[in-house]
Image (cartoon, rainbow, N blue to C red; front, side, top):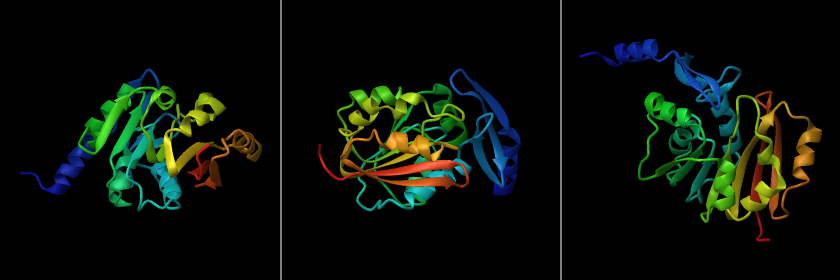
Length: 219
């Protein structure tokens, strides 16, 4: 029987490897500071600095009344773990992920699987938002292809559809991009529906821009 330390070292030795995704390119599972993380070729995707960025945003959202969560861009699933273990948020989570390779990595490498409180859907987040009849108290948007957020997630059509998916008094945490200019952010904010109040956080951990939106009225 191997002890926990031996198992940890064995796991570490066998999980520093690469996966190849037709959507996200090279995905690397590796260890950093004693923690298993998931990277793309140019940035962290899950369980490293990206988790720190999103936690910084969640620290500024009251989660005590959140009874349903939508995660757009599951990645390796770090926010599912963070909501439960860091914030004691036991609300059911619907996780949307376009890349089947990421869904496979989340399960094999990080133990993220379907359960009573977690529904994982392999579909496009834009299509889901424009078609779903469900609504949520908290929506976390973290949709990157390597370093870039696809342009369609800044479009008014997406955010007009979003107004029907966020419950009244609900919140949206949007990881808007890396190294955006203030002008780029303001151009996006000018297109938002009037039912949202928002708070902008520039240079979170030096590079990311987070926007927290609160739906304060029905249009």
